[in-house]
Image (cartoon, rainbow, N blue to C red):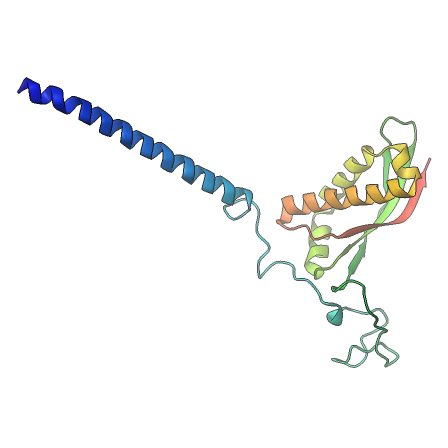
Length: 195
């Protein structure tokens, strides 16, 4: 009987190691999958932009300043259709000017910058509503980005374009954190003073 017990012991140890290795493999694959889904926003965390999220607005549905004219015809208040040409964006631009200006010191400089900005989005009004709802957080993100700006960025045309792109990224990152969707495509300067 003692010979049988000695013979079964290595088999049982081998089976136990195999089971442990299989469990570890399942945990690694499952953990990797869960981590990937979480990072993609499908598992908890951020809300994915779905059917209830912001929708792109085709140019044919664009709101026009000065009235809509006859419904369904896309006419302006004068009764004529807006001019159309080839090229341009496929989607309408929805603009919003942030009321209060931003003032910040420049990085490594005794100077400061004061700017006014407006944003645009190709999405419906829900992106602008998200921006208005989270204006305090957005203002903070813009001020942080301005504080990292150098004199060169605010005194040259290329630098200002680069700064505008950094502001787009800062605003979208804040909106993604707060609402699960950014949607801002451009920042426009409505006021720009360096002193």
